[in-house]
Image (tube, rainbow, N blue to C red; front, side, top):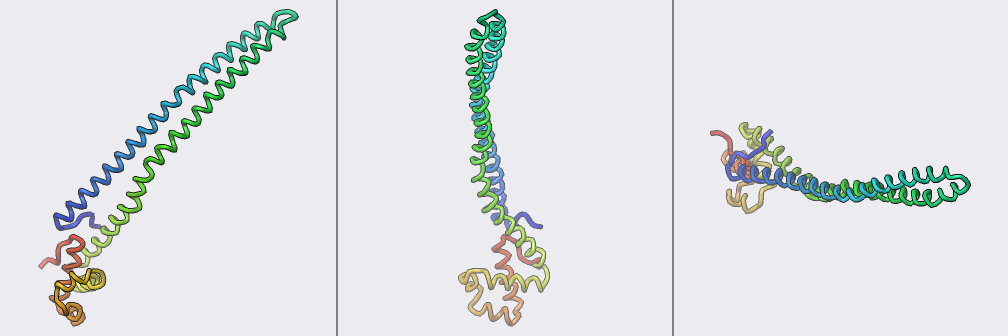
Length: 202
């Protein structure tokens, strides 16, 4: 398996691209965590609301219980405290709901923020990089034997632009069909150069 080209300019470009992609992913992950921290701070008012509502409801319920002990009018005096305690519980519930909503946002917003950058890496850069690794690995493995040279030459004939092939001579395809070693070597060298690899060792 070959991760980088033999030729320095191509290898340097690949290395810079790989480093950039790693930094790109790291930066967006940091942004996602930053968004999560900011959103989670929005839950603080909900926490205070829940705490205050629960505390008020408890105190009102206790007070209502004590007032309820008053003979004859205890039940009548308890009703306002009960109603106020229920209202305080509603406030506490609103605080809990707000915290749940913020918790969902704290998951969704960072995921959305990081989804597009990661999708670019996974669906654009990574397939291109893996394709080069596979092609370069095969090419570097076969370049040292004559049959491999012939395969590389055939690959060059089928995939290289006509302008590059024409530079090798107008009869390059005919020379390859005739098994001309120089033509085969030139075509194989062209394909290896396209991949950023050095030619066959002399």
